Length: 243
Image (cartoon, rainbow, N blue to C red; front, side):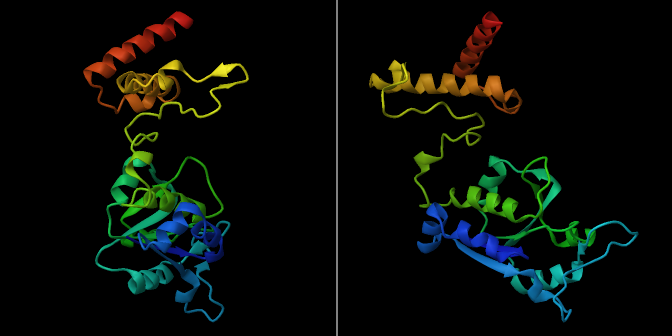
């Protein structure tokens, strides 16, 4: 997979690309990441890429002609172009899964007061990583990259992410490791008894319980099987009894 990031601040990505799993994926040629300096495509002798907004107002707006020149230069027939913007669709694991199957993506990092509206004519996805505003789209671009790269074949083992929160549609079950007892709290007995079927049921129950208590909205979009329906009824009864 190829990822091209169009930004005014390439230096922000250096630590991100040279650390941990992302660095290994690049070194192992499982993903190719290219940083593109938007200023390269300015026709201004001072390399300006923005201008004041028509109609007045504060801030500066990134010019559509500069962005179009950049895309014309770096885009291929396989490219999907993503614009990071607060008004985009909220990013989630399902979108990450979909994007991880693309051959090439281009991420446009928003900045200042955003882009000239006409940029949207050249964009496939408008994506927001949450209901808040950042100083620029670089952190959002890193978030998108990280979530996609870890899903690529051979970057990490499939077992490492298949039960992740949101990957199945539910929050992930609690995890434990040594020491067995700490501060008078011990690891649940079911996790050390060696019965894999009991462990599976326990983890499913805990996953449903956490989702019910903390992100009930996820259950509205989740298709429960018969076993999960019974467990959820049990969780609802137990929750009511505690009130």
